[in-house]
Length: 87
Image (cartoon, rainbow, N blue to C red; front, side, top):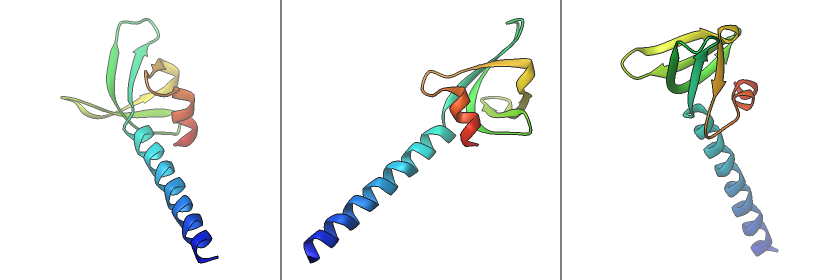
């Protein structure tokens, strides 16, 4: 009985750790935002999505907020829709 409780606790901790790792990777995902005409491209670390704006950390510029309607979003690691939905 005690061994079963230890195994259950170990499993629970493992599942929680995996969930935390996924949240961490989503927050640090690199995304590319392109203007609708393709003339402007910004690549940065996804920070969040709020009130219809992407927040990304762009090297050399800092934190940038860009309206969703002005750009298309691409990510090689995650779907942008997933990133927006989890923010």
